Length: 152
Image (cartoon, rainbow, N blue to C red; front, side):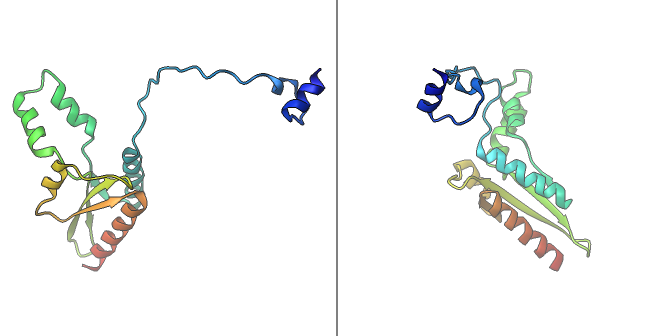
């Protein structure tokens, strides 16, 4: 009986436990939220900057959301966040060259198919913000920025 079953399903091994029927997939509630690809790109770019020893600044989205929805936070602070931080570039990167000059790069990270929100478009007006699509493009932009800093 076991030999016929092995042949019927194409099993060539000798382990009898491998003949068990596949378990039904049971949906279990996810305790962790799925990480969006943009957050993965953010972590990769931040890790790269850390390895290079380049200073950067990032305001996490959850902190801004916390300020907006927490009842004890003063209204003026909620207004400040809503008016001035909506659309802020994902990373503000500083690099000091050997001559002692500080340079700054405003970097907006997007997925390959990402689009700028209206708040981001408004924030970017009048500023030189580099919008990159994917971590590879962001890393190239950072390398180009550091190279520029070293020359100037």
